[in-house]
Length: 431
Image 1 (tube, helix red, strand yellow):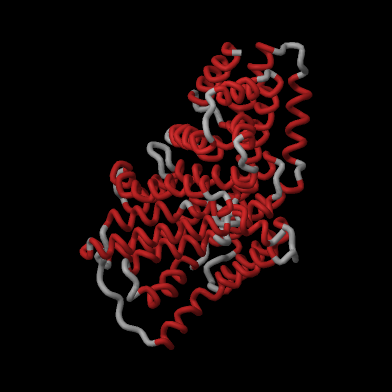
Image 2: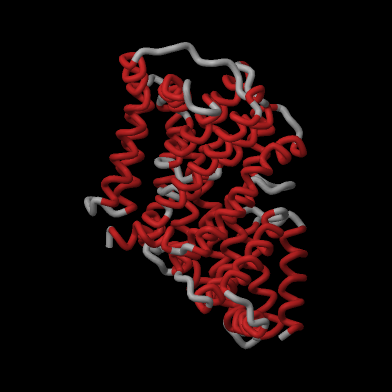
């Protein structure tokens, strides 16, 4: 069995390191492994079956729709509306306008589902505005990088859809489970920003002008379209009115209406959004086909059972197991993209976590958080690259600024491990 494990790692490193697309690399790895160790197995039939099972999954229909909704919203004026609507309310809060990054990302994540899109949309306005107003550069960059990752945790989430399909878990329950952890993580970010504002007042820029209550309420009108879209999409799912797929379709329509009403979306922009959504969906579909095929292949080879038995023999406590997995995923996140991490490791790690007493919904939220950490882990962290393009700073400087928020996420993983009810309370209430 050691030969199989060594061969798997070697073949995968060779193929993915060569620059081959991840989906094709996973398929090729599965083909090589079966050819070497189970030559009698019909590879083409197995691949065709897995491709059909994945791509015909009804649960997966919501994925391209949520991606399309995010692509449409990126082309609207939502980012400017978020900054204008939130600014008057943060004048007296410790940390002042630095909280716009967190609140803006939290709100946009509620209709987006993409970490990268959340970071780009919110950051293209807030980064410039906050830096021009004298806010500490590292605080602006770090808060944007950390809060941008909430696009994966706060529903609807594309990563949760992919995990739900692979783990055969209810996507709606996963969405519900992400509500409280997402809110608590946002509060933790704001707590750090507020504490830093108190301890280092020079990190906080100029005080916004005084506004009356009427002016504050008037500013909320800027948030109206986004709040209505959130209620439209999330409320319809949790209220039992629509399935995730139906809510996603309604969300696409709502995003188009917002873009047209703001005069920011024309036919050319809509076509560009549709094209980009199709490309992203096709890429994810190929990765999922490759992952499911490879998972089935290594399952036939008995590798997951062997690794699970080896780790169980260590006699780790549940918390120790989570610590080991956290380090494992952080290391993977330094060299791999988050989606690839999930689809490649899930067949091995999910049985381990279930044996430790955690359910699949909890593990889904755990994986989402560690994927968020991968988004801000050098050298391939996608959010780091996005912010580098927005600010012009080096990856090293962006990474240093992001580190406090990375550590907050690491601590949050142990919080939900010690108190798993944090994840299950909302889906259990709405069951």
